[in-house]
Amino acid sequence: MKKIFAYIASHLLAVVIGFAAGIYMLPILTAGEGPTAAELKQAASQAQYKGEFKKDLPGSDFVHWAQGTVSIGDKQIAFEGSVAPGPDYKVYLTSEFVDNKQGFLDIKEQALRVGEVKTFDGFIVDLPPGVDLSRYNTIVIWCEAYSQFISAAKFR
Image (cartoon, rainbow, N blue to C red; front, side):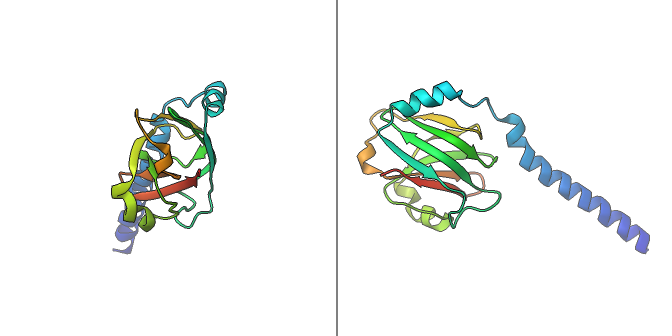
């Protein structure tokens, strides 16, 4: 009986590990090509504001983080750096700095969703027409599928 239990437990563990690895790897395998260095440089050159995503925010952890420089202009947000791979990442503008999940959930209704992150080594997001950047001071990367805070960068 012990052998049967060990056999079943070991196979269930292998299935669970395989499933978890698949969930983690799928966004990496399906990620699009990121912008080129020249495209990022061009977008950054038109920026009015800059900010920094940092790995060590209270709401970030070893699986959910972003690190690098973000540039914000009238038409685009350009990010030069890395984002931890994951599904369904969205970019929001907020009027106050938040550094964790609850902080973002508290103001999410007032936040402006401006785009999606589909690459993990830099990205460019086009801003919707008419966005008044003077109303915002922070960019938040949020995983919509799992309601998970990834990172935030204050730019004003």
